[in-house]
Length: 516
Image (cartoon, rainbow, N blue to C red; front, side, top):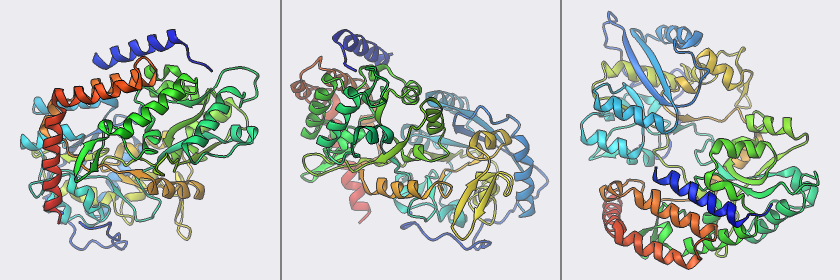
């Protein structure tokens, strides 16, 4: 398909309007059944503590009363001596979650356990509303064994841990870094092409997917690359060794990726591909849901996503194969640019961080529950996968979880993600092919030198949210020449970027000094 000038201008206008409106490397898991150093339940048992859990998750199947799983979970905990507690889960998706969380915080109704992003985390720490966790994590062996030191460093302020980062099991394929390119393998096969490993090869494939009728329907109805309005060109920037909003070290200092010359090179390439019609021109106003619909309708040949989407249990793959018989998806990463670099951005440690209210009642009891949920000989499998023999089976020799109930069914019963009160990574249920790809994805990441946001950055969110996106949109679509990137850099520094960069470097050096 080819993009037109009218489409381009309308899309840009709509898009811009929308924009304005202290633990070492992963420790081995404790032996099954061990509880040395675990929190002892000091409660009297006379009063039941009902913990309010607030999660950022869309799971409409999950019943408000917790479903049949709730009694099973509470009874299983009681058998382990964890009594006198209950839980109530509230779910909210997208940005609406943070709107509700902020209202709860300002009205004095902060949940007991909830997810936080970095700005919310810092604000609540400064307001004294978060529980200090050092003592409780030290007494929770199964929970703390899953968490790496680097993750804890990001949620530590003045030596105090204020949140629970994502944990993961010790298998090498259990990684939070899962992103890469997904390609229609059946289209590659039909056109006699291979998965690209360089930007030049990627261009060749995108061109063929756009103009050589890869689906064989005789229509000009496909695009080489599909994306949504949140950009989704990370692997292209990664081929130049950067990610626009990450901090990268250059000459002993850190700078935002979008002010580096490599950003201009990536923008130039994307503009060329866009003008050639290889990228869906509607991406600027395409929501993720619509992008997924386009994938299922065989509009895109390559797109950015997590490798899990090629798993045999993937709902996206199932929907695609229902619409296009014989459709196949494959995963690839490591697409190199002129300097031989490649990768997708590493996952933020704040992606699924959990915090606990300073006003929580009986935190010891709460942490006994959380630790039990991370104990393989406790509630780990029940929480994650349901009832053994009914919802899943476990191949101990092969260390493989075999799912019998899909996630929708687990949600309806009250298991899985809605009741995973702390986030962890366990993909023992996926195929060996996907596990290999996960290790490949883990090996090709673009790192961020500084995750914390300095106050100057929090005070000037429009520099990334509006200014950068405006120039990104207009340069990629050809409304601005590539040289106007220089104008963006000048405006960024003039409008607060210079102070942000200065403060960020001070924070970065302080962190480096403290960790020596």
